[in-house]
Image (tube, rainbow over all chains, first blue to last red):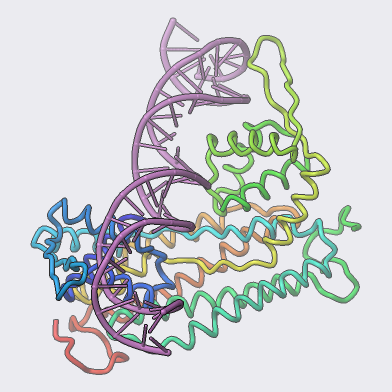
Amino acid sequence: MEMERELLLLGLLRQADMHGYQLMEFIERDLSTCTDLKKATAYALLEKMAGLGWIGEQEVREGKRPPRRVYSITPEGEAQFQHLLRANLSAYEPAKFGEDIGLAFADVLPPAEARALLDQRRARLVDELAAARAVPEHSGTFQFVVQHRLAHLECELHWLDQVRARFAANGGRLASSAAPHSITN
Amino acid sequence: MEMERELLLLGLLRQADMHGYQLMEFIERDLSTCTDLKKATAYALLEKMAGLGWIGEQEVREGKRPPRRVYSITPEGEAQFQHLLRANLSAYEPAKFGEDIGLAFADVLPPAEARALLDQRRARLVDELAAARAVPEHSGTFQFVVQHRLAHLECELHWLDQVRARFAANGGRLASSAAPHSITN
DNA sequence: TTTTCCATGTAACTCGTTACATGATTTC
DNA sequence: GAAATCATGTAACGAGTTACATGGAAAA
């Protein structure tokens, strides 16, 4: 994930010189859905990239405040950005769904209970969806981030509803599909 | 992610006593798509869970081989499994897409090049999809893992094609949708 | 005046991976 | 007899997080 983070910071610094706090403000406000970069990590990364010569740092002090370190991208940083961007766009890293592990064992629970638990999962998903829909429009290609999230969450909801239907609340046994063998609980 | 891994190991040990190597064989063969547990991690986790009393270990030696540590779930382990299972089923952790960061900056490239890079991404996605379709059927609720992967990958492909269409190879400029403002490159 | 915000950083820690070590056993 | 496989582990490392420290400025 380190490459993505570097790409992100370089990309933002390409648009405007900024100090760490500014960068993190933007990231936490507008990009919290696609990255979970934390302050400590960002500061460390900026320091490292400055050491590598990808970005230059300039101390700016106003009055007696602690000085702010304003970073600006260098030609080497720009080259690196271009490289990281191409690598990122052409790559595809299949996502892992840790929640599926529970699903694999869901048949040890009474179907009604499994169903109730999945209802809770669904409620959370719906919250996420509502939050995603509430995000204001972004400029240019930034909107892809929001749109992807939306498309994905809608897909997830659809799939989850299919799964929930398999644990039908009536009767209390798994619906068709699975061959009728040894599931009695 | 640690909870998922514990859940996974406990769930498998619930079905049958096994030693570490056996567990990892199954996980790598059948569950590589939804978890990336590695051997060293698994051995450490098993040791830890044995220490907590969730699983019991029994040394089994055949001839002069290095002895195998066969684990079996204990009543405390079973309780823990039930707890982890419920927590897992009711939770929803929204996925993060690191690849979207590149997309957010894709407008710095000539559209034709962006398109070409996304074509590579698409090829990889298609490979994943083919692999997912080739997986043989699983028993019971284990098939959910495969089905989720399939649903997700199909959704991804559809979305990626939408994005690719925005970087139309003809002309060489972004297509409609975004308000016509200041995008000249 | 106390709290919150701005702004940067450090130290300890967790989690997980990589790469290696070991040694017997089966396969080519 | 060399190579792959079975089976377990260790040590070093990497990336990232948490929690904290600092200190002035603005807001309540």
